[in-house]
Image 1 (cartoon, rainbow, N blue to C red):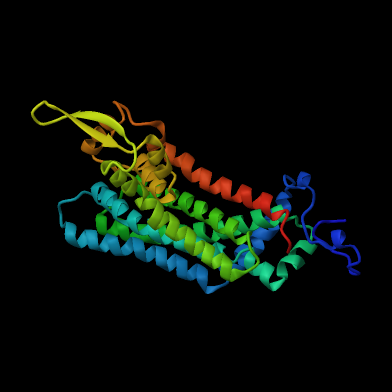
Image 2 (image 1 turned 180 degrees about the horizontal axis):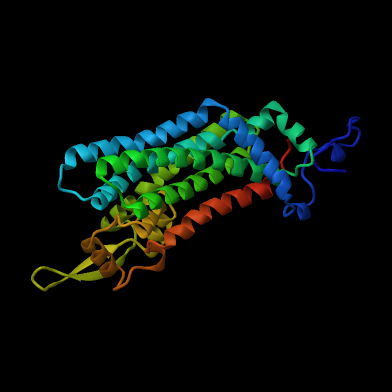
Length: 331
């Protein structure tokens, strides 16, 4: 008997449980089925006001800083320098709004259909639970990515007109990294949505994740560093050369604290932008201080390219955990 169907008489409690198929079915994926679920999910969103709103919103957060930089910059900055300034300004906004939008897009994806019972109807078609999860992820990701593309594409004309051209590599880099960042939070949102049949709980979990990453995780390293300086936590001692040539002893948090901090998706977003665009996240003085703190070279997990691995981690792992978990939940 299929794990997604139940007999009508309800005589056998073990048979009537709407639990998943054996674990061997977890890896079974029908790409045609995933495509069908994703296509329907995408078309439903495109037909709604949400897609238009997102496109206009992303267009606005690009155009407003462009006009501001153009108005304040005068004749001094070149098109390339102004584009770098635009990327540096816009990414602070997108770092906040993309997670919010991705979580809003995804928190009802599974929980909403479980709550209304429509998920059982969907699973009565030749779709496995894995197909549904992947299809929902692809569909919601496509909505977010396409709205980003439309907003960026239309804003490119305004940027080019006001700046007299723009640095294509930086502009495309901002778009590509923003999409990657959005995919990470969409995966997290779909994963959270699969944990419960209540949209209220799913919404609370999404809000909790946003607070965790944007508030708690962001300030964790500062808090640990403060505790180290106050001698409440053990740290790592190192020396730097002072202005007069004297050696000054300092103390920093343990490497684990920095590794933990680097797995914040928002931190990874900034680091990847620094890696793929000309917008440097850290000036040479800060880089030198980091090298001194770590004995001459910055650790692997603090290098900008490693942030790509972090974003891929947040795309793959939440979705993989959700796929495994969703096989065993009652619908």
